[in-house]
Every structure is written in structure tokens, then in C-alpha cells.
Length: 200
Image (cartoon, rainbow, N blue to C red; front, side):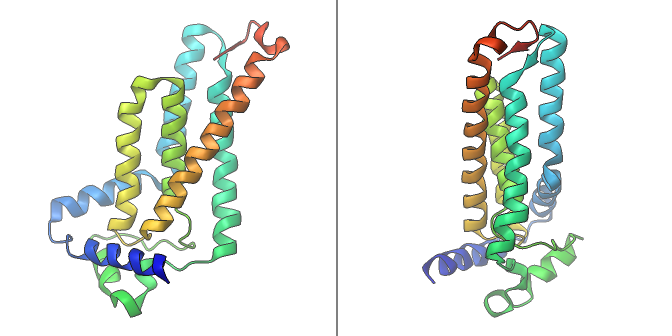
């Protein structure tokens, strides 16, 4: 299959750049940082709290962004992954032998247990980064680079193929945009727009 061959070629290239311990630990750190989308949930909560304290109003768009992060994560991990059931690169002995397992063991990285497609790390990272950027553009200069590094780290450590990460990232952006559009529609509705408790 064409996509599989591209994925395997990219993953094989990753194996050639595992010879620097600092880089290995750097990407391990970011891969763990994106685990469960915790960093993004915390980031959104901090922004929500700061906005509410400053404006004494609930930011409707951010609330819907957080809601669609949750909905998208459920769709990604408990629907698509179970339908596609793609095994992860480190299981692909035919293409890589035990190279990724040996690498994961060398950096003391726990083997991911769920299916590979699409990447939950990439989904949550790009979903939250897009939501944060749509809310405040300046924050995007921080959020997107972190999202890219987390997504790349998943290919680097052998937890995902390139296409897993690409589709996960695209789904994250789409779900974020849906939350933004719906959140704006709710905010612009007469009842909410006249409320003393809601803001963008």
C-alpha cells in the first residue's frame, strides 16, 4: 500500500537519528508531555480561570473549545481507533525488526497499548493549539510549536506512523473549528449576548 510504504520509509529514517542521547530524551519528554492531553487540559483551564477572574465572565468560545476537545478525543480514541485497529510501528517486525522496541527500552519508554491510527497526542495538541490561537492569536506562537514537537515525537519514538499523526492533527483542527463556530453562534444568540455572565 502506497501510504504504508511512505509511513515505513519515514519511520526507518527516524531510526537513523536515534544516536544522540540529548535528542532522544528531548523527544521522550515531549511525547510524555502530551500524554492524555493533560498539558492542554491544564493550559485551557488556566486560560479559562484567568479570563473569568479578569472579566468576571465565562469565555463561551473557550468553553466550547474544551467541550470539542473532549468530544473529539472520545471519537478519536474510542471510535476511529477501534474501527481501523492499526498496529503501532514498534509491532511491525517485518519492516523494522525489533529496532523500535530496543530504542524504547534504551530510553525507558513504556510501550503504548492502544491502536495507532489516528494519533491521540496529535489530535489533542492541534485541537488545543488551534482553540488557543483562535481565542488569542499571540498565544498560538507558543501553542503550535509545542503541538508540532509533540506530534513529531510520536513518530520519533516509534509510537505512531506519519499518517497517524497527520490525520490526528487534521481532526484536531477540524473539531476545534467546529467548537469555535458553534461557540460564536451561541455567544451571538440574543439570550447569551445580553447576559452579564458570558464573553468571547
